[in-house]
Length: 194
Ligand code: FE
Ligand code: FE
Ligand code: FE
Image 1 (cartoon, helix red, strand yellow):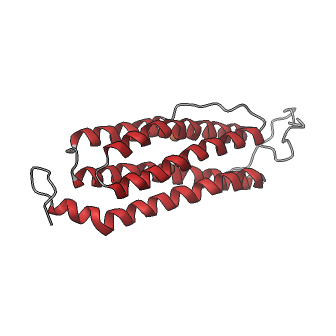
Image 2: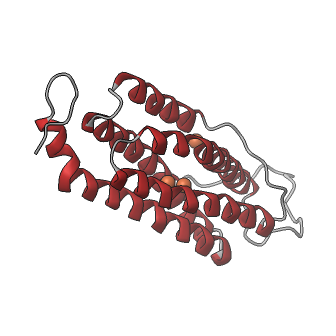
């Protein structure tokens, strides 16, 4: 890490609000990142029900259903984080999640309704979303800890664990049945009778 060169006569920051832990630039970055994931989670509360409806198997529909409920809780958890920071909840458009959701929507359009390939595609699109969330929350938890805010780190860690678990559940669903059944599917997209 580079050594900070102090300009002669530069003003020393001595504001009472968090000056002890110091870096206001980093604090602003943290807040902006929370606004970004807040936008993303809120967008997901609208996008996930569409994915759930488009899914073929009950197994995938139910897994997405569980995560819709969790996502709503994650939105409330972020509101707790804003509160702990003494800020009003504010969403800032997350271009990455916007793109991932759009990609998910086009995947749904490009796969046949009622096919197993549809579910394979939804799982893959969903896992890309979960991985973005895991990266975001993983970073935020570490940052909160570095800034000495265990309360916020704990709140964000609860969500991080839910995202990781969702990712694992999706992998299990794909590997247990859906990938194989999609492979058996005939070219017209119909599932073969057992
Ligand atoms: Fe989430
Ligand atoms: Fe983002
Ligand atoms: Fe998620």
